[in-house]
Amino acid sequence: MPDSGARPFGRVFMPGPTDVRPEVLAAMNRPMIGHRVREMEELIAHVQPRLRAVFRTERPVYISASSATGLMEGAVRNGARKRVLSLVNGAFSGRFFQIAKATGLAADAVEVAWGEPHTPDMLAEALRKGPYDAVTVVHSETSTGVLNPVRELTEAAHAAGDVVVLVDTVSSMAGAEFRTDEWGVDFVLTGSQKSLALPPGLAFGVAQQQILERARAKTDRGVYFDFLEFEKNIAGNQTPNTPAVSLLYALRAQLDLIEQEGMEARLARHRAMAERVWSWVDHMREERGVAMRVLAPAGYRSPTVSCITVPAGWSGPKLYAAVRERGFEIATGYGQLREQTFRIGHMGDHTVATVEELLDVLEVVLENG
Ligand SMILES: *Cc1c(COP(=O)(O)O)cnc(C)c1O
Image 1 (tube, protein in one colour):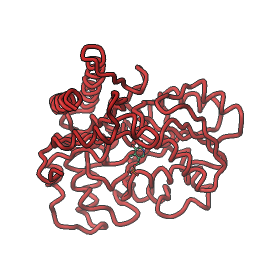
Image 2 (image 1 turned 90 degrees about the vertical axis):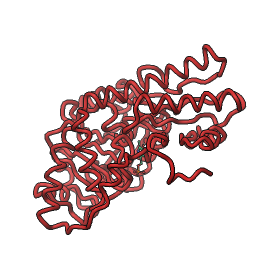
Image 3 (image 1 turned 180 degrees about the vertical axis):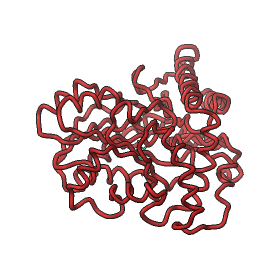
Image 4 (image 1 turned 45 degrees about the vertical axis):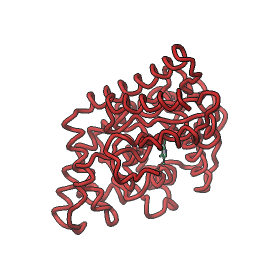
């Protein structure tokens, strides 16, 4: 196996953790500071407006020293009262459903085949069947590359009454368009290691007031992911517990770089990378006789991750291994799609140029076996 430590930036196309720029990694190499000191408050005060710009919100952005799954659990514990409806179209939306059940709530799923999106009509119909008070949805389903229409789904949920929408944007925030306040999203969470292109270990969330009202009425919302504690602490530029100090240094460096690029340019770059991958798949199929297709239907494809069916003679793990031998990292299919598909994470700080390099490698591998 090639030594991953010797790999230059630009070779890791896993849909998380994504490649992290050397200068962002280097930013972590600083002494520790305490978490109730002015320097830490200044750091958090510095990152807050920049996080809000990414989430497109006026609300504070909670910073959690956990992986994203922690805030998925927090979403349900704080935001759902009794009965949850989970939109399930892949592994991570399935996890959200499992979490809802595991926190002791009644939960049902609207399941569609892996690779398919949910429509607002499906959601409206399902909400008529029971007294649901919360809906869980994954924006970019990382196991299939499907982008769910969160804006329309949120409208449909709110039209059904006192229903909140809890959204996982782990692989899409900072890579796909997402407007927390404008779309009326009640709670949204993401993780550090996907489109934000930071090391794993941080999660971020935004709760609207109605989520906090619900949290206040709940006595079993737990401790570590108690949103009322996050809300109280972030108002003073603090976190409830010891923050992941080194990761916050990286966060500061990365948010400054994201600000320099500009969110519009960042999103356009992600669209361009995705379109390059999709047109390459079409080209391989139509001009080169390599039978592959993008799993997600056009119009519902994530700009950050593509799930592609493997041609005859290949499997997800076999293609992964062949690409890795050439110093690049993609991902196999996930779960039930492990063998039949592979995935490319074209997110974070990749560019069309680094994507081209990967596609060249894939082309050589696929044509020479
Ligand atoms: C990666 C991922 C998660 C899980 O995130 P962790 O940080 O591993 O907890 C959840 N949802 C989606 C859509 C993901 O891509």
